[in-house]
Amino acid sequence: MAEDKEKKAPAASKAPAKKAAPKKEAAAPAAAKKKPSGKTIVVTQIGSPIGRQDYQQQTLLGLGLGRMHRTRELEDTPAVRGMINSIPHLVKVVDAA
Image 1: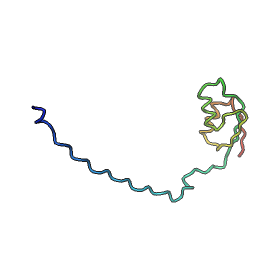
Image 2: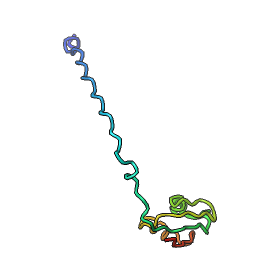
Image 3: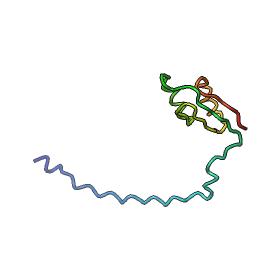
């Protein structure tokens, strides 16, 4: 009987959630993308990823390479240079400035 007395009244319904304001579109979507600085390098895969450590295989994929003798023209940035320096035995680099 004590349980009946302690029954609480139904909780008040929550206030309706506010609708999110419509997102504003960027005035210049082309300006949001980074433009290449003009310096590029050509990277060619010369070694097979088969039997290599997983991080080396993932680095090749990050550079856009996945099969032997594939070539990519990439922006010359410190990040790309660091990836290339971690797998120099698998890629050949040509400066194409």
